[in-house]
Length: 506
Image (tube, rainbow, N blue to C red; front, top):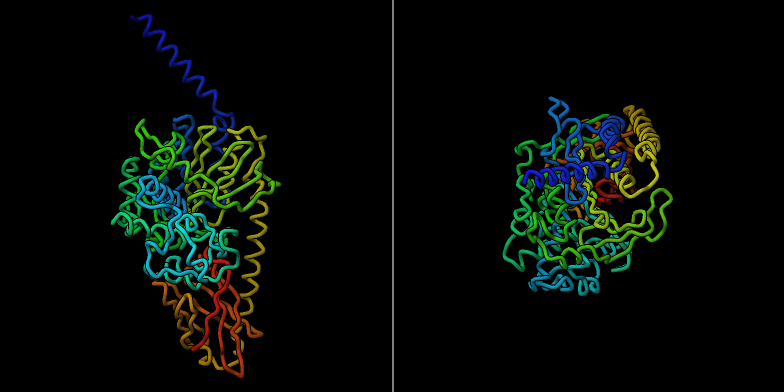
């Protein structure tokens, strides 16, 4: 018996040694230092990461701090907003309902949401659940998000506001990343099950996966234990704390809050064909359906990465990486960015959560880990991207300073009161512009706490500065006709929406 036990022990020791040796040199010897240097270079207060390989956790660790005022450290249980990494949970839930014949992903949205409309009648008649989950209704990426993001509109108001989103592309032909699409798809769930999206996702995915500290909604986020604060360096170059997003009205697109400990369970399920701890959580066909490409948005070889094609499934991006099939998603919330990635052929999963939204280290780190496991010759992905990032930031900050230097109390083209009043945009609704001496103040009626100041520069150009620095600092012009103010175009950070909104003066 002792001989048998001794042989088993020797096998376990040898097998453990083999597993350790099997990890790439970069992962074993350099990764920790790489991350520590990266968060310093990119001004990231804190980061947490999990790497899963061959069913085992290789790394589960926090770096830096979750709060720069008291330096409380990030650990493996620190909560972050995972934002759009919520989307695959929604896609999986709907694929599960499809599997159980509660619905078909090819069902028309109008079957479940009476009166729902898109901009044109043809798309309205044709649009399906799958179209919504695939970002293929023809709208521009982030279109409508300035109205919908972090606002006070209800889910129903957002869905019915989509009729004002004029497409820039073709239905089912052009990819345009659409948060309100995912909300709409998610709202099919209560129509079918009688349970709100958040309850169904919690009951069918979060609970079976034992993701014990994951919150499906963000309500009360500031009171959650071990929650990271949110930061940005946008528009100032310095770390600024920003308010937590209120994503619950776009819940199916972005509201989940989690940590890398819980996300390791999600990754293990993805890598074990729908099983966790040898228990079937999702049928394999459900997992497969989420990964089928429904629209291709790039089929050209990358000049930087070993990538040739990229497409989108049901809440997940799909592509290749050095000859393997890759699935991933990023998530961006105010003050936080994240990514979740898995490579089934290598039985490899990665999740990275960070608390500065104005950086690309969270992506450089993911690629660096993929390079190590997939045999790509070493190139420092962080320093490769950092130089261009810093140059771009320096130019942007210089432009902002140049604008501020033009604030010299110059006389406005019209009396300051001519610019005040109520302005409307068909999608957004109302804003109010009032004056405080020679400065204009803006209140945004579809947001609870968003305001801005407008200061006159010269040459009919003004400077817009939001009270939440994440929204940005931009020049603007009022359109004047016959000595009367007609309208104003207002821009927000590209992180929120790319195009400005035209507000018409009443």
